[in-house]
Length: 187
Ligand SMILES: [Zn+2]
Image 1 (cartoon, helix red, strand yellow):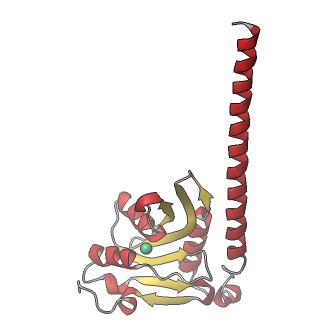
Image 2 (cartoon, rainbow, N blue to C red; image 1 turned 90 degrees about the horizontal axis):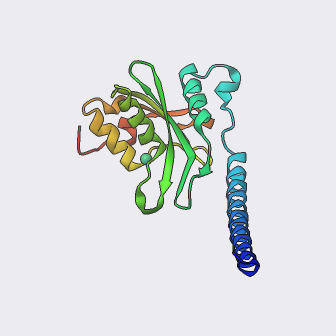
Image 3 (cartoon, rainbow, N blue to C red; image 1 turned 180 degrees about the horizontal axis):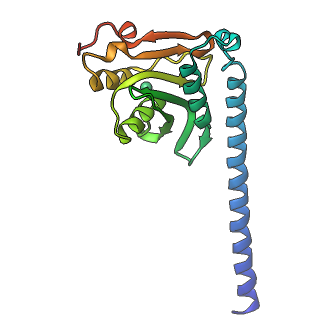
């Protein structure tokens, strides 16, 4: 290779490194923006409930909250996938707690945290839900969406109405799925 060719190659090499560097900076900027928005949202939620502070809150809900909190980790995985902005814990009838995070993707391939936790429970050989708790990225309302309710109904026809759902952890507000969805197409 002559010197001129070598120089040209070096330039190409440098420019691709520069390009990569600039792309990385853009991505870091986007990530910082996103983290900043996320942190500002998280600042005013997840206050410990009064009953938690008084020491009278049901320990199972506290354990579920802590388990969900452990996997709450909002992050950008690729240009098309983000995850962990919402987390959920599902307690099975055997008393085990299963967790899941939301996964958001381009073209609707993602999943809610609750259904991810339920699938985790099924993966581990169980299918009877006792309680559901979710940590959402807003002021603490954790009512499950229609798709998650539908899955719970189909998993436990005739028994789903007894599933307890933490609607608002900061207020220790619990409802049964039967109260949330009194009229469903499956009894
Ligand atoms: Zn859902």
